[in-house]
Length: 250
Image (cartoon, rainbow, N blue to C red):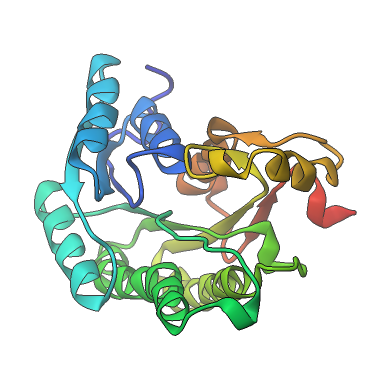
């Protein structure tokens, strides 16, 4: 186990059964948080929980098929119960990213992307942030994307959903910040995960445009999320932090 600066806090991480979410769950647990690993796949979720427990951390799996307001409300309720009546840290990581030409994008895909990437975080914050505000403390970290900042062919739908999440991040900082709840976001660049494995050389080509010249590892994104969730970022509110190897800077 590492430093215990998050000891005593309950952290809910969505999409936490693999990739960036799993890396974030494990890192928050290393820092002392009781982590609620939310996701669809119970087997993968229990694997993440087992890894955390084997290292001396505290974690529980929460089954969540995040697709609409009702599913978000149910997760918020279950997480609060598992957390002993509280959730102190919310990481909105769950997301879907179908790419392709606008004209070939189905109405169902449009609805699904906005339901998962925008509406679910909205409803989770609506359910969990007021209780954080009542207690006078809390941290919310939204996982956005570098393509919220610039145009990439075939990513209009995904990029626009993450641009919406960036605006929500700033609006929630204004709404809940005065009550001690910090709301920030990270914008990952190309990252090696199970979800991006199928991109192959396309992932490397996307990453090659950045000064770092390579894709990120999931742990590198998790470090930024953990920073924003912790006390080291106590004066950081409404920030959208690029973690993209410098891509948006050049």
